[in-house]
Length: 629
Ligand SMILES: [Ca+2]
Ligand SMILES: [Ca+2]
Ligand SMILES: [Ca+2]
Ligand SMILES: [Ca+2]
Image (cartoon, rainbow, N blue to C red):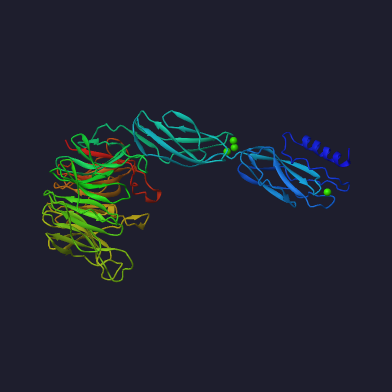
């Protein structure tokens, strides 16, 4: 046996003894007929430690060849699935290799060093890799759900790619699910509650190596019975239901107690973004029966906004949420499209703002940058534009079809594309400006007015900046002359002014009584004298409307952090109507009829930490009716 062969044998024996597990060694080099070469001496660093899915730099510094030969380095591990040693090609020169370990365990990594004559040496080290527990990033759970209906909880977590997981869900009613999770970065778990109540839900994700993370959902879930009735302050409260979907919202109620709005249908569409939740459909609720009003032919979604005492309904219909929505009138159940159809190149949303006893309908069509306002006379297929201005937003109409609203104008000194509005009163083709109280602070002699409502006599109400630079509650007589009703507090959050026009509201009835709110403060005016409406305990009160009896409806925060619907009258003061029969923690009023029946939406009140005085606008709501006996 030659000396070389002895060396080679010794090397192979050394290799075999060094490791428990075989190393993918290179094929034996062809015999080289030289007696001068001496084999290299391989050196490897370590032992090393680290965590899974991290890169560990393994050193081969110190490797030498007694002949001073240039050496080739090849790296190998005892586990080719969980250890990535990097490129398979042989590297020349000594150094290091970054090796990735995909799971916890103890691994052997070797460097095989070969000189140009084919003489080789191997050095092996151990790398101990520990497990990283999974990390839950966020949980998504609806705030409420109907009893006996599946609830989906979305779990987003991360962990090493090769680990497998179980998601353990404690649903808060004594049941625990243990579900294998096939996806490493997240999953959806589903549960159906059998008993109404408020449940706190906790998720634990466990990996196959004993690592775990737990998190409670950011909100509890409230499970309710939609058929429950309740009685509050002499009102019966009921849930108007949905078309099988998760959400419904009433928009208007007439004096016969008929309610219109929008409710979600499930399963109506498949194969697009809306397939999961279905589309919204316009509804008519009449004496306990919820009826789907359907859409215009070819459309997929619709909503009803206004109904008069003759049962004429105005709303809109669309093919997709992002597409144009067309004005739609339902008479005796038939849906008719408002003409002319909007131009195809501008996405436009038509909304019914008012319908009066004559059946005339006031429309606002909103484009991407501006709005137009149209009047559609009863029985006519088309509407005509009211006021010529860049942007016109009508807000109210009386039974004489007198209309009020805002029109944009250009004001010197106000930069860019900020639209500033003044108020108008439109009467049978004649437009008159509603006088401003003064000038807004942002531009020299630039009035800024917002009109909200008009009564049968032509008196209207809204807001106007005064010469003191503050926004005021105002009213206008039929000639457009303005009356100051006092400073309207700014809407603020944590001391910062926010522009939140939905909380600034003025309404007037035919007796000339006025209700309004701004900055969470609500007032009632009769004969020009203001009276505070107060609150349900936490000082944040918003007016929505008032009826011909002088009953004001709105919502107000309570001392325990809920938001309730209220009615207020001079005779009876503040009456707490609660949140509806579902016993959720929030309610928002949307309207009141002449009988005093109230409609609104009910949902869990979720507050942003930065906006503690206001419940977040909910995405899933129930349609609630407070009916007087
Ligand atoms: Ca050598
Ligand atoms: Ca692991
Ligand atoms: Ca892990
Ligand atoms: Ca594992």
